[in-house]
Image 1: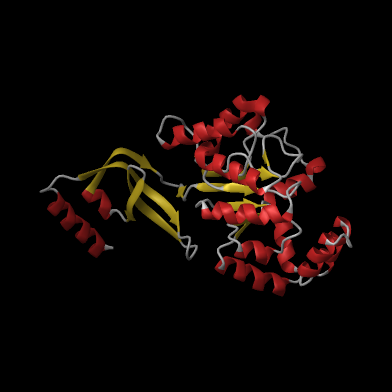
Image 2: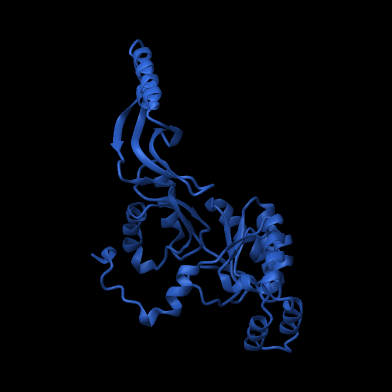
Length: 312
């Protein structure tokens, strides 16, 4: 302790001969959780310039730097901004309500969101760009714009396609909108167009997320370039050794959707899932399980949101 105090004293003498460097934000006395080890590192100083963390370290940084704004984080933790990887801005009659949610994301520590399609794409794209240049308060937005679907799908505001020509026009329109990725779902879209849409979007330089069509195995769509499988229900198909047979019999009309789901759950295997998930990762396909919304839907009748502060 004496040696450390003497070292700080010497640094203080040296630094007194030269002015401190200035940073936009200096946070002191913070506790940082190491994401690698889980260790809690206490009494840390964090230096931020613009939108970049310059460095973190101990009290010696206070001798060298001062902040235009300084925050004493004693007794508090500092952690990276949270992501919500699957949100839906939507409801053309609720644009104002969607807009009012933007600052609330930041209030709850969510600094980035991934909008996986909706029916108010022009508004969301506008909010995305305004936030990016600092003209609006809200999380950084990555959006797919309207999703790709088949004719007469159940989703409002989607781009319905029934041929390769219509698919090309839909993808060209998404490129013009400057979306961040493409969302494809399987309500009314054929397996052939689903696969083609994935391949063509990738060629246009756009990542692709999707509800994977039952007429395509997860490995096939992963190899085609699918970036993310949305929802755990679709990902569970990677945990059955019967996926190819289920696919073939479903396509041939020899198995109903209910029979396919039952067989899938009867043949789930942790070892099969681990092998396939590792393979998908090597092929560049991730999984967005959306566990929270799945739980909320399953227990909706038992949940009480009346005391939520967000409603006030």
